Image 1: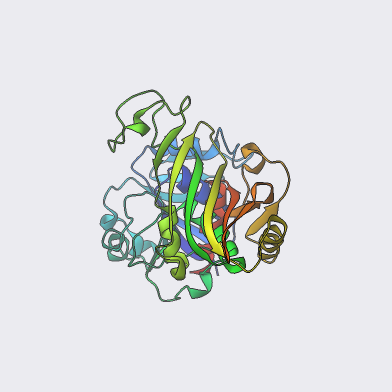
Image 2 (image 1 turned 60 degrees about the vertical axis):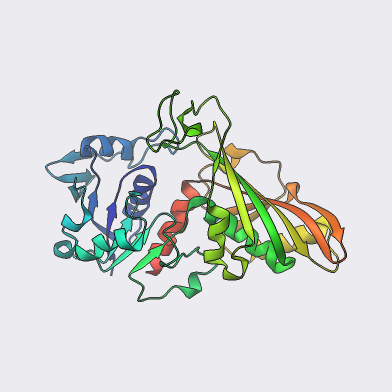
Length: 336
């Protein structure tokens, strides 16, 4: 029987999640909620400059409190307060929280108060909610957990790289840098950014923009023994899809070189369908729209001795900050 799900928030991630759900017979979408005009959201669901059209040959439109996709008529709400949503009446078993507004246990409780049985959050959500990355720690998912975080896109991209490296050569300390495609939180032209972030107030399409990132620290929520060992930052660059992470780490090993490290990374990824390994000379456009959570790039691996039994290494991975994440998020929803 299909799982009854509702989607709260139809921004870029929410719309891509909805696309996936509507083509997956494991799910029945019983409602969507977003404060924006449903006509606008229907248009953006159908047309995407980055992801191409959706629902070829089907009419997609907003009408009378519904989002209509072909023959499906999905109840649609424009409610700012999740506590007032009719999740109980609609029988929503799982709310996919994609608005960015309910990213803590205290805030996400609003969905449970409204009658939802469980909530899956498409963002980092603190230390008191389980953070799950498919292929890494999904075996630890508690079937009774009322709230689960699907982490951030960068944590989903970095966690497998850190896990694979740590399995081959235990990590002592590491620093990651995420080269991230631009996002709607940035400005089209120089103007005040809504959260007061000065660098994100600058024109997104013409600047390389350093910014903060919590992805590396959040890896410790997914792989507890790495907690406190990783830190990192991010750089926003003017591409609309495709992102890249480098991890610089001090590791322990009796012997280590590029060939042996790459062989270990490839072997780790080959045994897990969520991940990939490549030695092709790829660029960001080549991995756009991938459904793999993380694609290790063996061409960028570097190893340097750092003392007896220790090495400095550089490893790298590609991911699509939207489609890689959405594929992971829907996989996780299917487990709840």
